[in-house]
Image (cartoon, rainbow, N blue to C red):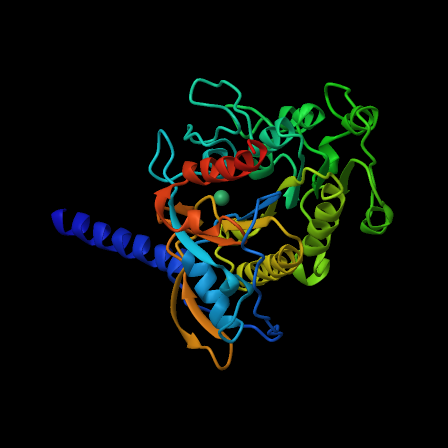
Length: 380
Ligand SMILES: [Zn+2]
């Protein structure tokens, strides 16, 4: 009897180990067949700060960046960063955070509970960097590749103790302090159980509502709310440089405000492919995000007083680079989880004020540094 039990437990242990290795441990290989050129950029690092662009790679750790760097033959636009720091991502009630609490720390400077968006631990709404920009008479905007009810955009435009309250988070956009929005998720703006037509309400607030990139490209001025897809935007191979185009379009529109602007840009789907342990799509997303960083840095290098910050809310997938070749752009990786992991994430800065982002700090400090730099000019 005892022997039978022992045999059973050995078999179950073997099965557990086996399924673990099936799920996470499998070595995956990716080769970047279309490496891109990267230029050396120099910011106009002196002078007052007018514009701040905060770029978030959802779930992007240093490992993602170094793996993408290897895949692109040893170069990334991120290499142009003029200062680098490390951000501690834990949230108020958990060691391993999510995009709700992780993004709220970036948007509002406060650690909050897991799954909360734009509220403190008691559920009180927090003012995001978009609201701060409006208080300083600046414009504000966001551009993301995910559905707009997803946690990161909601951290900047919504308030809820539960990130799964998708209908409420979409309705929050009507009162959000934004002048430009680009993202997916059109299906929850209309045909809602509460009978509200959020697109109609946004129109009444003075927003133009282009339904395609072509329509958006034609807009020359004014407030824009662009939601060209029912859910997320398509994969990079299908959408091309859409995130870069939508970001630059927003920056050009927001920059018409003589006081400048704040903008949040997210490479949203790095997180999704970290969760699904899909190295191929994860690398495509990371390389797309880096090329968006390149487009934004090039714009910032020409526009005086523009600071670009690139960071993440947490790591996803426990990605580990175990082999490969810089010359061939090949990477061999394993994941260690389908969820988020606990590791500090990098913070890259380019432009005036960059030096403030050097060092080791809490994720909330990123908000406070940006706030300090934005207000510094206004006090003059
Ligand atoms: Zn996630």
